[in-house]
Every structure is written in C-alpha cells, then in structure tokens.
Image (tube, rainbow, N blue to C red; front, side, top):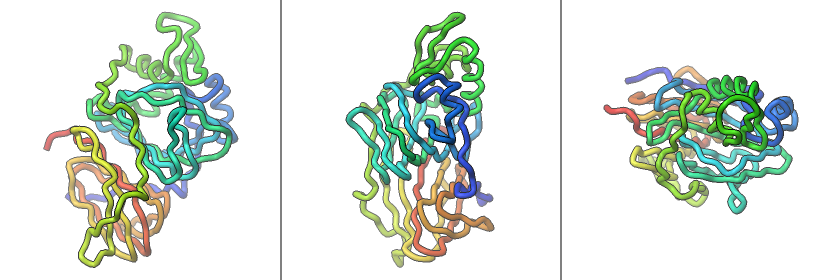
Length: 299
C-alpha cells in the first residue's frame, strides 16, 4: 500500500508550554508560569497517534531546564534520545548527549534531578506490549486542570487537599486514575532497569549494493518486537522502507531531502503507518533515527 507519509518539520515549530505540570519542582501553577522562559519543560509536539487505542503515542522534542521527578514507573513505553545535552535518569545513571534510552512499561527509574541549563530531548511515549495504550497529552492536561481544584502537584506528586482519594500519589498515576476512574494496575516488569544505548558503539552495516545506505539495529525489545535502529546516507541517494505490520517513526538527525513532494531537513519527523511503504531521498550525507512501535495488531 503506497500512501502519503506524515511529515512534520520540527525546525519550523516553536516550543510551547505543555500545560500539565505533574512533574518538576513546585506547584503546578508555578511550574506552568515558568515553562518557555527558564522553567521545567517546553514541547515541540511532532506527531501523535490515535487517542484511546493500544498504539497511541506522542513524539516530541522537549526543551528542558531545571527538572526534578521522583522515582516512578509508567504503564506505557518510552524512547528518549539525548539530542542536546545530558539528562539524569537516576542518582547513578545519566543519558549522555547522543545516547538513546528505552524505558519499558512497569520498570521504575529515578529520581531525575537536572540542574538549571538548557537541554533538548527527543521523546517517544507509546503504548507498550501489555496493550494498555498511552493516555494522550490532551487527556492528561484535562485531568490536571480538574485535579487542581482539589489539590496540588508538588515535586512530581499529587497532594489531595479535598474529596476522597489517596492523600499523596505519583503525579502521572493521579492523572491516569482520575481520567479512567479506576485504579492503575501496572504491567508486569519485563526489564529490571531502563536500557541506555550508545549508538556510536554500534557498527554500520551496508544496506544496498553500492554501500551508499547503511543501517544499524540498536535493539529489539519484548515479545512485541519494539525496535530502534538508524539509517545513514553516505551520499545523495534514495532508500525504500518496505511495508511492516507496525507504525514506524523517523527523526532526521542530520541532512535534507525529499519524501514524495515534501521537503525534509534536520528535526523533521516522519510517520510510516502499518503496511505502508516509503521512499526517502537525501540530497547529501544524512542520518535518521528509526523507532518502531510494538506489534499490537494482527495481520
């Protein structure tokens, strides 16, 4: 099936206040007022999936300053690529610039504690192998607005001051349970810790006869074959992505070129849906990060 790909030029977007504020220091109202100036996080939302489905996702660039998050876990998966700067993962773990992290559902990490400064992080949050899906950013924002009426988010936790419910709770867990009106049951813990990868340590392998296209597989995770890889154009060339039964999300780390009638450059995000094919042309040497969502549908 040949279709027009979704192509978003991240270099043409502006960073915006995410408007949730369930992480970071201080009360949610204080955090939100600082985002975009010198506060916690501002986002360029590149691509989003279909709300209320097992394959929902959010693919974004996050500009981060001072940031704190207590130890916690999620019922969804994440990939994080340190696009510019280093990021704390826990007291003894740091994601260095140019490294990729896989954060599996049900696996705890933290506390995260980053000093003031400015960093950029490529983030993909998506429904994991359990099929619980991913709560959309708009759903989280709505839940946060409603919870503000009965409490406050402080240092990554929600403190309830009115009504029934847990008096102290992880910030994301409070959002999820408020939106879904039931207790959050976390998926089984498949991995003991997040997996941090240094792509520079992986070897490029030829992907075509003349060696103009090279690839490296960074990892395949869980029984649902969630995958991370990279593609490099050694010179001006074209590369075809064959059909697969999973959504693929690409991010241009360098280079420029065309996809059908769309131009792409550094920070461009590309979505290739399940069973679609895509041909990408690069005008010069280029590198793409490719993240493949888990196989959650049959056929």
